[in-house]
Length: 577
Image (cartoon, rainbow, N blue to C red; front, side, top):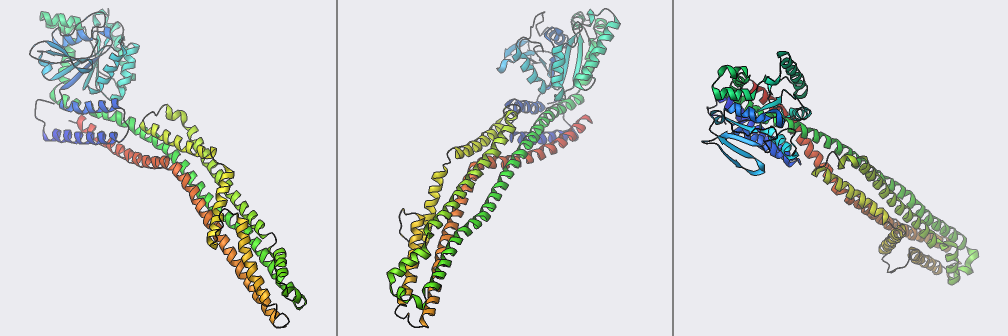
C-alpha cells in the first residue's frame, strides 16, 4: 500500500480495520445484497493493498484530460473539443508510454512519470457522456477512490449533470477537491470571485462540507511547464494546486485517506442495508402479527368447538335418557298383577316394548348426530374462510410495496410463500364439498360406533346400528320379563322382576350411551385435529419463513449496529493519525 513501514499504532489500526470490514462482509453475505454492492465493497477493501487512487471526474468539456496532462507534465491523454475519453483510463507508472485495454473497457496507460510511482490516476468519461454506460462505469469507479478531483469549467461551472453527480457520490464519504479549470477565460478578478463563491456554495450544499477550490488554467500550466516558466506556472494557478496535492499526498495523509476510503464505502452500504433490514423486520412484524392472529383464531376455534361439542353431545344423551325414561314407565305400568296375561304373551310384550319404549329412538339419535356432523362441517368451512380472509388481507396490504421498492430474494420468497398459503386456503374453500364432507364424517362416526359395539354392519346407517343395539337391549329386557311370567302370580316376584328389568335397562342404556359418546368424541377429536393439521400445513412454509427471517434479521440488525459503532471508532482513529 505504502512504501514506508507502518508504525505499531498504524499497523494495529490497519489490522482492526481489516477485521471489522471482513466481519461486515460476512454479515452482508447473510442478506441478499445486490451483486453490484458486493463488488463495490470487495473492491474498496482490496484498495487497502493498492496504490493511492486519485480519480478525476467532471464533464467532458471541462478539460479533465488537459488537467491530467498538466499534472503529469506530459501529453499522456488525448485532448479535444469533443469527448476524447470514452472509457475509464487507469494511469500508472511504467518504463515507457504504453496502452492496452483490460476487461470491462478499462484502458490502462503506463507512463514514466515519478508521481505515478506513488499514485494511480483514473481519468473518467464525462458526467454528461452520451453513452450512459460510461457514466455508470464512472459511478462504479468513484467508490474505489481515495481522493476525488472534481474538474469543472469556468465557462459552465457546476452544470446540472455535475451537480447531480456530486450529489450522488455524497454518501460515499469521499474527500473531494474542486478544480475550476479555464480560469483564463474570466476577464476580471471580480468574475473569478463570483464563480468561486457560486462553486463553494453549491459544493457545500451538494456534499455537506466546503471542499477546497482551486482555479487553474490547465493549458497555461502545460505551456509553462513545457517552457520551464515558473512564473507562468504560478500565474496559471497550477503551482498552488500542486503544492496542495503534494501536501495532501504525503505518506501520512495518503495513509489517512487510504484507511478512510473503505470506511466510507462501508458506512454507506451498512446504512443502506441496516435500513433495509429494519424495513424487512417491520414487514415481518406485520406478517408475524397475522400469523399470531391466525394461531389465536385456531386456538379459539379449538376451544369453542370443544365447548360447543359437549353441548351438542348433551342433545344426543337427552334422546337416550328419554328412551330410558320410557322404559322405566313401561316397567311400572306392565309389571303389575293386573297385566299378568300380557306378561305371559312374550310376542305381545315385545311388540309393546318396541312401540312404547323403542319408538323413534334410532331416527332421533341419527337426527341429533347428523346435526352434530353438519355443525362440524360448517365450522370447518368457516375456519378455512377466516384463514383465507386473513391471508388475502395481508397480501393486499403490501402487494405494491413488495413488488416495487423491495425487490429481492427475501421479498420474492416471502411473497411466494404468502401467496402459496393464500392459494392453498382458497383452493381448500373452492374444493370444499359440504355434502361430501358430511357423508365422509357420518361414515366415520358409523364405523366408530360399530367398532365400539363390535358389530359387523357394513354400509348400514347409524340408525340401523342404534336399532341393533336397542334391539339387543329390548331382547335382554323382555327376556327378563318372559322369564318372570310364570311366577307372575307371586306377589313378591313381580316387584323383584320390575327392579331387575329397570336395572338391566339402565345398564344397557348406559352401555349404548358410552359407546355413542366414545365414538362421537373420538371421531370429533380426529376430525378437529385433521382440520387444524391441514391449516397448519398450508401455513407452515410461510410461518417458518417469517420466524426464521425475523430471527436472522434481528441478529443482522444487532451485528450491523455494533459494526457501525466500530466503524465510527476506526474513522476517528484514522483522522487522528
